[in-house]
Amino acid sequence: MFKVLAATVGLAFAATSALADVCSPDVTISYNITSLDYPVDNVIHFNISPCGAGRGGTLSFGTGSTGFGLWYGEPQTNLFLMGTAQDLPGDPEGQKHIVIFGSTGWAASAQDIAFGTLFPTFLEGQLIAALEDAATGNGSEASYQLIDDFWFNAALPGGVTFGPNDRFTAVAFSQGQVIGQGFAVQTPVSAIPEPATWAMLIAGFGMVGVAARRRFPAAQR
Image 1 (cartoon, helix red, strand yellow):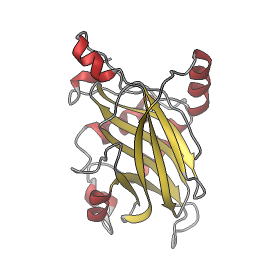
Image 2 (cartoon, rainbow, N blue to C red; image 1 turned 60 degrees about the horizontal axis):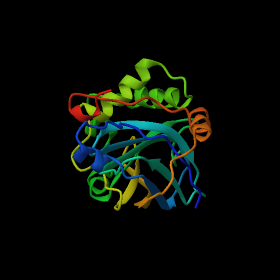
Image 3 (cartoon, rainbow, N blue to C red; image 1 turned 60 degrees about the vertical axis):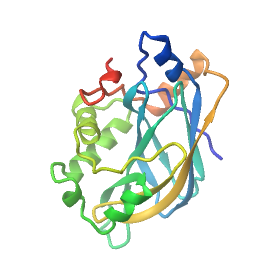
Image 4 (cartoon, rainbow, N blue to C red; image 1 turned 135 degrees about the vertical axis):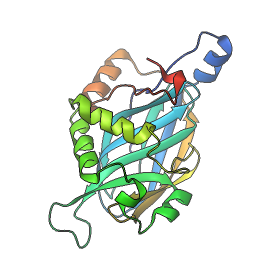
């Protein structure tokens, strides 16, 4: 299984030792893709942990990918992935789509539903452009803000996130087409990447900054 490491996002340690104990375990979440019909690019990972919430590093993977892993310095409780795909069957050449990796229950309710119906306050084309911009590693603040607004400001329907030991389903819009499935596993790790490794990760994957909102006060920067 191909392993990709990404820096911790949304990490906020409280002063109390009790919370520090909750936040301290080192874990790797492995995303095992059992099927994927089309390549997905510009994938951004969102997470909620006992210490806050955030987003981090961009990934791309094709149909040959069987899995990838993300390293964290704290346990994770809710997960969500979002990226882009293009040239689905029936598309004019170059047409792009938002892809959401969410819980299987949410995916069942999202099938054959238009993006604008599920997310009436967001334009799919603008969100695609923001993801592509963020994936460069040097995206504009406006792009990051739009991505964060989509995640944090009640845009997502209930049940879309999945846990670190749950199954997930990839749904491509504009019309809620299931294009893949998989499962996530959280496992403990024993070592923290060396500083040189962190520099490589930041340069290689274009890490985006921690996102914090009033909804998640534990994630204050």
